[in-house]
Image 1: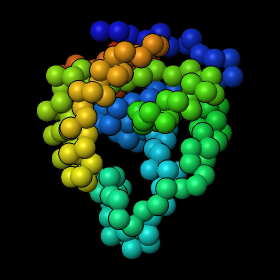
Image 2: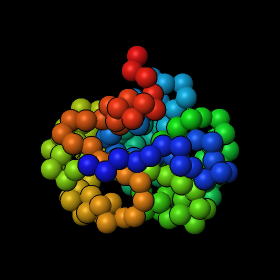
Image 3: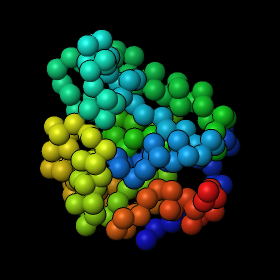
Length: 181
């Protein structure tokens, strides 16, 4: 297991940015701890029809193609929001997408990549189903799971790699970044 060292941040940053794989517990951590922000990209990346917003939960919107359009302000709008919040929180959690990683690299922002071991695939698929994520999104993620994890393994930089049923909160407590409540 590779473990990151907190506190080794870019001098322009206050917050530790954690780029986290879907299902590690970003939303849970942010709802439980006031010093953590879950900065999801969904409404920065896409615009949705009013009917879709009214009829679907946040998780159901993931992966839906019909009724959404790419936001022409993406990814600049997301990065502006991220930069706006780096002095407001201790930890900012963002989704682990290629475009987000590219933007963070281009902006020279330090981050930690958090993702599960490849053998945890079944655990994560169960988590997605339990939270009511759109089935199209789950199928796409299931199909690309191993490839995505291998890409993350090959990246340079700080990492938190989760085993079994571990969550991001478990690791943050273990690393003394948050105190269990």
